[in-house]
Length: 152
Length: 266
View 1: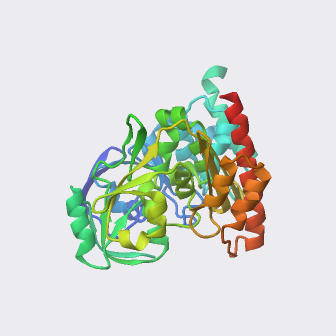
View 2 (view 1 turned 180 degrees about the vertical axis):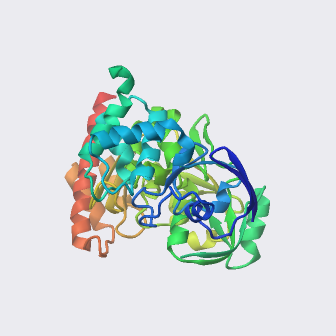
View 3 (view 1 turned 30 degrees about the vertical axis):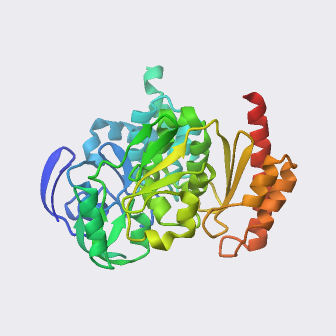
């Protein structure tokens, strides 16, 4: 299918395979920050934004993205870097494989609910799994990131 | 892994319906997740996302929900929360993560007739009506029992009655956001109860006799016992039929008790 879409505000036009997932499409176009995890919508590692909403690219049909704006972690600017620093300061990053998906989800949460409570953070991130850091340090880093303006 | 020969995004319902009926291997995509995981071989995948079916409209006596509306849109809609309270939030919060709920559509969940579906159970409990392109308007309960005859039709919207409905939803899962082992929903509108049990593991069904009994004022324990007695349960890797039956009885009883509290508050 011939499609036109935007990836991180850059226009892309070309042919998308009818059974390609958004994950396959993005990685084949060099967006390697989008990781493949469970491939069954369980881990959240492949999270990207479509028109600003977080989705799981491992099962999002790439053709459906025609005409839409796709954002990967490269397109979030300094926010992702800043959140990454808060996470690493808490020791919440170990292998880092889940970080791009986690960061994309947290930034989506920040847009929706910038004053999220600890419980709201945990509920929103229920679809993001991490196999090595545990979740307490991640939550602590995320809460510090969200409260950073209050602490300045 | 699924295979698709052609992916189309029709610009009208008629075009979509014609594409669906062209040949057997053509298929409508909802969120597309289950279709992909089932490893189907599809001739023509028909994507409805260009048909503006992702609306939530408040009408005089009902709420109309477009079939392409996502679970997240429903969950976060202010008007839905004002009318149904936290009913849908309680129902959807255990469905995987936010990203997943941004993809799953109301139409895909209902038309997929999934036994584990939380949305089918919650909509059936509110006595939802469905509007199909060819079949017109039908009750969700009728659709569930006659799904084969709707196979080549397209769901346009679901309509929920906007009555003074008090409803409670409860499910039991192996962990917070897993597929439910059992789900139950109970609603009451001016003394008329609707008790629904889903993930038995079969698709959600209305416990008619128990609903009548609850309306006649029997104890919650009695209504719950009658509900599980009139339903069939099955076993699978998630739980045995005896386990499901015990859980369903407890959850229904709990829902009826909570409704009694809500009624006193209102």
